[in-house]
Length: 555
Ligand SMILES: Nc1ncnc2c1ncn2[C@@H]1O[C@H](COP(=O)(O)OP(=O)(O)OP(=O)(O)O)[C@@H](O)[C@H]1O
Ligand SMILES: O=c1ccn([C@@H]2O[C@H](COP(=O)(O)O)[C@@H](O)[C@H]2O)c(=O)[nH]1
Image (cartoon, rainbow, N blue to C red; front, top):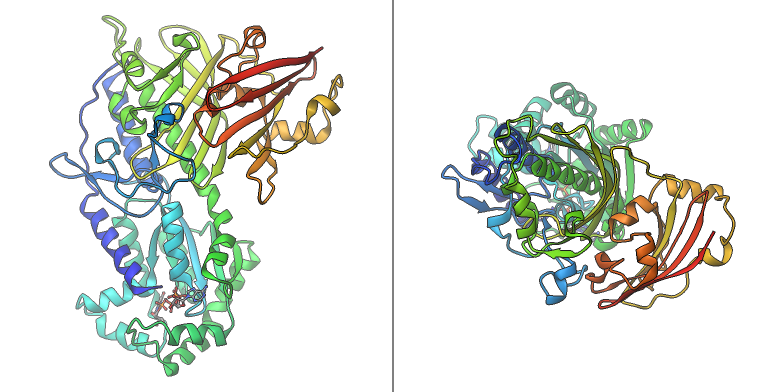
């Protein structure tokens, strides 16, 4: 890897370790117990590590929050509907450079087991180069075993001379030394997502790491590249490394073939190796890697949503404010379908403690069911789910369909939220219902499946439609040039983003699709809905300023 980015990486690690202890301000409001709010803050902290990509600041001893890293995914809270004023800009904009320290949650140790990806390949195959890109896009912490060893030499450690000699000879340093360095770096870091680059280099490394840490990698990346190309790259690297000379390079190749390839074979056998053609350009290599990391992001977004809900349940306004953009827009059931902008409306509920109520009376608990995460592009993710809310003060369980749109920014979290109260007490979601949605970026929509022509009147769902409904969201079509794609969304999820199939919404132009209205470049062109008993078709058109729906047919 380029020495410069490695230095940056080490600087980040140092910063993280300096700020790993945190303190929190007291919750501003208490609809629930104070202990609940404390529990949320603990989870926010743990998310900071568990989803370190998402939460990007630390709180120092004095309680002053510090903006901290330049790397990784951090999501911005921004009201997309209110975005026309330019608060957020296009979905495709890059993340902001500077975090807004005031709204970023603190970070601390994670509750969850680290998720590790080993990055392997011959010397010079581009491991470090790609790790820097993955860090940028997915918020992993990059730990290069070679860098850690070189830093150990510089630190004047008693092992320094031994390590120096091994590196000069292209030999593999004893496992105990490297594993200790890795463990220390992981413990000092503020995330649970690690790219471990250039390790394990032999079977002993692999077995000992598993034994000592109990960690198995999620998968390994194997950068496949012929020696001629590796040699060309290493001789042109110019980073002043003692081992970038032809003699040591050849020794390293030999060690790689004899000792490291068997490790890759091992992971291949257990289905964990992801082979990448490393001869391609840097961009092409990254494009091949990119999809492998998206699931991490989906997990992080789901976790972030869950922590946010805990914050809401326990009345932890400070957590809520850190996650939400001050200009956030929402459709709240309490606002009778009207759009509310900003946080004031929401703050009110944090103060709504039951008068004289005890802890039990103020306790609420949310359970997220059927979560679906859809990454609209590398900066925007949609989390849809049904939220079951239990309240000790009544026997009712309420069900809400919620959608939260998260945008990647370097300040904080949630962009947009919308939910619709479905039922009280008994929950009767019809999972057989589904909708086909075409989203079009930058206008330019052209043709898609039109359920009103081939599905009309037919109450039997095709097998593939049922599967699409079950799997919730499937992107089925994404032409390479027209930025338009179609996906199926079960009604329950689409309702969450503003589609309300009520009589009212049929009768007049409605605010049906406000979620998309604010997305400057997205128009929702068609919405069709059908279930097994009734078939309903609506054609819906939204533009940045208008939104109408027309009932086409109904059985
Ligand atoms: N896809 C690529 N095409 C051409 N050159 C590349 C590519 N990827 C990386 N390089 C260049 O090749 C050299 C080696 O890359 P890099 O340092 O990332 O490899 P590495 O696998 O981390 O090496 P090592 O194992 O020795 O640390 C660097 O000068 C880098 O800029
Ligand atoms: O796990 C490891 C990683 C590295 N080494 C030694 O360091 C050099 C350089 O490693 P790079 O990954 O190319 O930076 C390598 O040739 C080994 O001598 C190691 O022993 N164990």
